[in-house]
Every structure is written in C-alpha cells, then in structure tokens.
Image: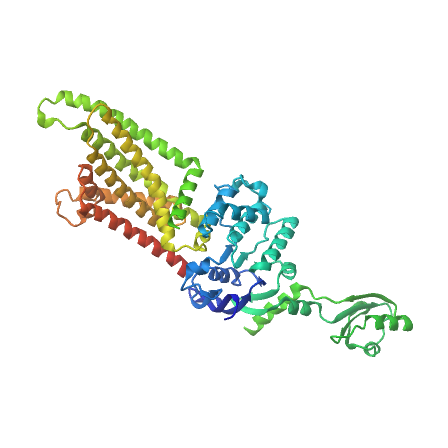
Length: 311
Length: 248
C-alpha cells in the first residue's frame, strides 16, 4: 500500500480530436506542495478539472488516496478541496452564509459546521468580514473566501487554480504562508504563472506545455539548473582565458564582451577566493564578481522551447 | 444531501428581494380573485332559483381561485426556474457543486425540491385562504385537498421542465422563454384536439390531467402522468449535466 494522496495515471483529454492534455502521469505524497506551471492554454486547468472530477478524462484515471475518481466519485470528492480559476462564489450571500453552505455540502457534521467555519475564516483572515455580502468584498477578499471554501472540510488534497491572481503583495504573502501551512498537513496542488512563487512555496514542480508534461521533479533540481556552478567576473584588464583556467577549481572559462568572463567550476569547488587573489596579484583590475544566475524564466523558456523543437 | 442543495436554493431565493416580491405579488393576485369570487357567488346564487343551478361555495370560489393559480404558475414558474442552472453556468459557480461529494442526481433533485418547496408555500397559503370560508359556511375540505394535490403536481411538472430548459443554456432569459413556450403548448394541446378528445396527443396535455383534480377527483392515472412527466425531465437534466462533464 503506497500512501500517495494523488495519483494521475495516463491522463488524457481530447477536445474534438485535439489533445488538450495527453498522457500525464504523476503522483503526490502527503505533505507535499506541487506547483503546476505552464504557458496559457497548456492544459493546467483542464488537468485540474480532471483531478477534481469536474471533467471526465478521455483516457486514464485519477486516484485520490487510492480511491478512483471515476468509480467512487463521492468518496473521492470528499477528500478534495478545489478552488477553480473562476471563483465559484454566490455573490448574493454573506461570507458566513456561504461558508456554512460549503461546509454542509462537504459533509461536515451539523455539530462541527460552526467551528469549521470559524477556523476557515481565521486561517484566511476573514474574521471581520463575516456579515458582509460577498458581492461587496474586494477582489482579494473574494479570493480568500474562495480559499476558505476549499479548506473548510480539512480535505486531504487542496487544489488551487491560480490562487494569487489579482491580490496585492501583502495578501500574496499571506496566501503563500497559508498554502505552506496547509501543505504541512495535507497535499496541495497550485497552478500559477508567477515563477518565483513556485520557488517559494512548492516542494515539487511540474511544467506542462501543449498538454504534455515536460518537467517533473523536486524544486531543488530546478533551482540547481537555475543557479548552476557559474560565476560572472568583470575585469578592466582581462587576462587570456588560459590564465583563468589555471586557477584551481575552474573547469571552463568563456570570454564575453566588456571584459566580462563567465567561469564554470566543479560541483564541490569554490574558486571565487582564488580568482580574487589571482586578480590582485596579477593586476587584472577586478571590479565585479557574482554568481551567474539564469532566471527561472529562462529555465522555463528552455524547457518549453525544447519541447517545441522536438515536436 | 439533497436537503442541503434544496436549502441552498431556498437561501439564494430569499437572499434577494425577488423571492419575497414574487410571493407577495402572487398572493395579492390570488387574494383579489378570492374576494371577487366570494362577491360573485352571492350575486350569481341570488339569481339562480332552481336547485340544479346552485353549487356549493367551495366549488364556486375554489374553481375560480385554482383556475387562476394554474394559469399564473404558467408565468411564474419559468421566471423562477430559469436561473437554477443557467445562472450558475453563467457565473461559473457549477464547479462548487460538482466538486462537492454529491452526485448529479442529488444536485438536480435538490434544486428541484428547493423550487417546489418555495412554490408549495403558495399552495399552502391558497388552501389556508380558502379554509377561512369555513367560518360562515361548511367547506368541502376534500375538494381543497384534491385541488392542492393537483396544483402541487402540476407545479412540480412545470418546475421539472423549467429545470431542464435551464440546464440547456447559459442565458436565464432564453431558458425562461423556452420553458414558457413549451408549457403553453402543452397547456393548449387539448384545445387543438377539441373535436377529437380521444386523440393520443390530446392526452399529453397538462390541462386535461389537471381537470379531474379541479373537479375534486384524485385519479391515479393523472397522478402517474404528472409523476412520469416530472421524472422524465429530471432525468434528462441529469443526463444534460453529465454530458457537460463528459464533453466539457
């Protein structure tokens, strides 16, 4: 018996012959936060709809804590909290009315409804909004109500489709903290366009492009790819490349414009100090030395671009 | 679970003034009709000398009020049923219900029950209003019960049809128009076949099956007709929503 909370097996969805999602496989364990990345129209939302039973997959299956979504939809759905891209809020109700209704529909027993609503409101910072009509709340607060609705029944898996869209920076920080907190006890899947966000909250990353999974792995791999073992050195009187290669630990050096040199080094080496010393001794006129980071955007572009080239 | 969905529908019905306004306006119409009918009863009965021409006050007033009620429901039900699914589809709130641990059948049954519960408030009020005749005369309560059951069954059929049309579109107004036209056609059907009462199509008419109830007769054949009508359209609605999930 494995303890995967979410298992997606060969998920495929056709829209009139066109594959919106094709052959997506992944698993998620308890306490993990999975980030779902991809350009517009890549199939993120479609995958999420299939995971939550809002859309039937053309092929493949979804298992939530070992329960098949197709065969036992009620049992499987009871373990999920879902916030779709378009918030499903009944705007004519007050926050309290709406959350009580959500709790009841998610089979929270009558005794615990009140407590569940209080807890959810507290976690999402909605305490003072109880009696307000949802219609009159700001965008950010409506989003919080949406998240409160998804976590009210303490589900095993929380699925949030672009949870931080349209929020102000403070709210985004709060929501991220909330996602981390929820991720401690449950599994969370979030989709987003904001790449640094993934690095901040997720343990696992998946990049999907044109319906296909192009990257699936822990966030460290992506971070490593991003930071790499590279230094960017700026010098007024740059020496020849061979001289730099003589410094211990440097495995590769490449001359760029404006006296900049990009240096690659082995995994366990730290040649920065040696480079500075060499520069001082030989008068290279060092004015800048910094780790050379590829932005996450570049990594993302690379991954989605490679896929295009293959196809 | 069905109850929770029904409660949600009732809550949103009464969350806006719409529910209250419709209840009060309709009750005002029925009340006026009731007053007029009582006045007419005295006018007509004082003119009819022979015993054969005389009818009871329950039947006279009851037929007038229930006749109006079944006619008004033809307009009221489409207006109430139109938003049940179409509105949710337009404001994209359906995933809220779809991702909750409830089956499609429960969602549809809950929405249907919510609407019927709202409308049965009117039916109870009408029965209560007519019972007040008992203060100065002997009311035939059997007649009231038969009419109430008939009206309830008819309203349920209207609601099921309205719910189905609401599930077909995103635009509540289109749903209301379609429901109204379909109901009107079904009501009028037996008029077209007035010369040929045995025709099969005439038997599909909603009016024809309401007639026995309005005479105070509870006929199982008519009950079956209304129940079948309701179940058919509820099933179609479930299938329509299921198609959403399958085809997207």
